[in-house]
Length: 222
Image (cartoon, rainbow, N blue to C red; front, side, top):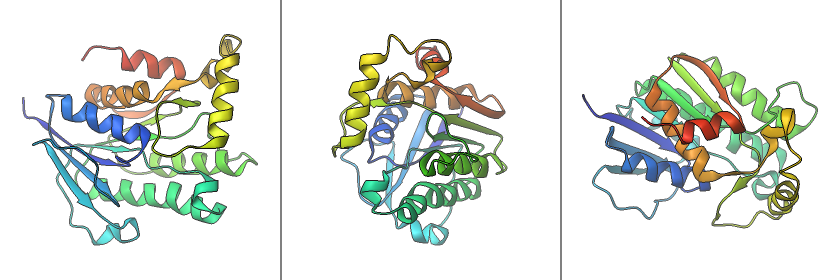
């Protein structure tokens, strides 16, 4: 069986870095190309790093790829404004998705957020929902959207609001059952493993994965 080629955006982030390691360790993938503003501290014969400006991604020559993984993301506080957040979180992701299509990618795996809803009054939740709608409208054979709650893992930068939310969420996790189960904290490594597993399954169509589905994917064999 021919090895697959993966293209990844967001490799310098928490989930993206873990996803990169999973892809490099998986014999199914013979090449992994990262697109980022700065290089990642990885050395692997399968890895090809391309430092780019996402504002000019349309000027980057297409790279042959089978599967695309997107873990781009920031916070409104770090971005500096809602407009900057929307540009980095939504516009860059859509631009990457279109680039991935031009590269021949048939599948797109996206890290979104629990509760994403394009009709929400909450700016963050609404933006994530609009992003999901935009990605689902593209002509991929399969779209895999991951909606984790609070993420557990070591970040390069500290996000105070997320840290407080994680402490509260972990304290309440045993009470978060039934319909609230999707809000339970989840290791970033589990999300990354789920993304790779979903792409390897290759089921066509649009898929959304919450807490239970992400854990099941991450522990599946394949």
